[in-house]
Length: 192
View 1 (spheres, helix red, strand yellow):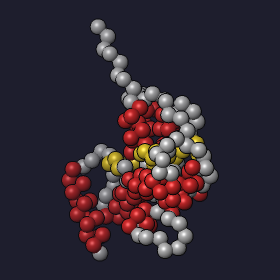
View 2: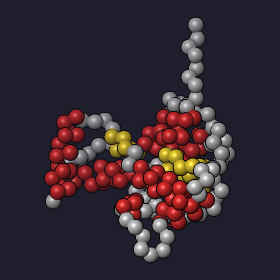
View 3: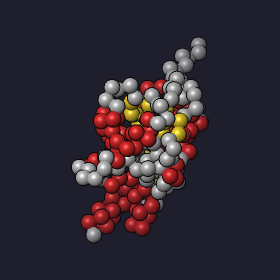
View 4: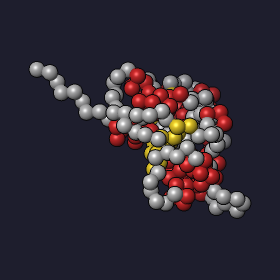
């Protein structure tokens, strides 16, 4: 009931603004706005930030230097398995990497959750190991220098998992948007 009330209020607010597009970095919000809000009258184009970045790179509106090496991508559940978006993050990494981006053994439709979609960031494990630490161990099998994420929950979970499993700091976790920001190419100087 509370969700329905809040969704109705948000739809009314957003429809009043009449957005051309809604961009979100959160795959959970992407899923909700795209798939649940139409039932409340919310009919907008909703894109994930990796989709927008991939579009801007493909159009040449954003330029990056491809310098990264040994990057593996962790598929967020609500971007990949729940909404079928696997290509945009990989297209962005294709622009960023000097070598081919790495894949986890469990990726795309078979990707494993980092745990935060199930609220595991706020819970103590009572059986087995923490799910984010297991996911980091899986990522480390690819011998990456960077584990790329595309979700704020995944970013926290993977970074915390790395801190527990690989505290030496030689492997880092970064959101794809952070990697793009770090790789932005210098703009061309205007010609006289």
